[in-house]
Image (tube, rainbow, N blue to C red; front, side, top):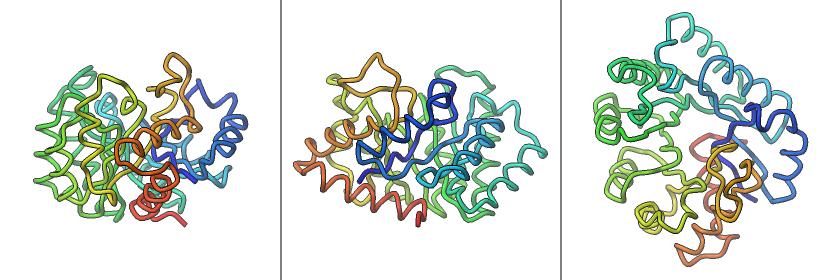
Length: 255
């Protein structure tokens, strides 16, 4: 059985067919999913889905794109949402220097505030890092971001960065791009990171893996990423499923 550690079931591309999405996930051997928020409405929706569906858990937080919306009132509501026992992490939070939809200084400030929020709640963090490796690592070092563990979601860095994150108490999660032929950097990292720090995800409805590129991604497709990880590690799909499942239970403290 597999766990999709990062998906967006509340997205308009998935939510209208949520029953079908969950059924196909189960048929594909995906037993649990972490539905991740990226702003306040999507965080609320993630918690609602987790409450409604047993296989679904929630992460809540403000994405760097929406850093300009962060406020004491938003933080207060995140704290209230986090009281729900099915909320397993604060995320996705971090930095995005690719789109720069919020000023970089504000992104960094809001990232730090949410790290502190997670620490006060004793929860792990789920990090979004796009074209911001240096600043992301700097903040995590200075703020002791791995105090209660965390996940570098949809890892896009190189092996030395991954190993540094592991030392800081982070898990490294791979999504559909691991299956892309030209992703040699990601494949090198996946092949060499300690097995007890690896996770798989879809980031659905985005980043569909081979051979589903061009189609809407969904949790059932996490099998393709897990199979690629198995090929890179010289293991069976069953072995990778068992190990990444164990890792997901540890970091998210799943029942």
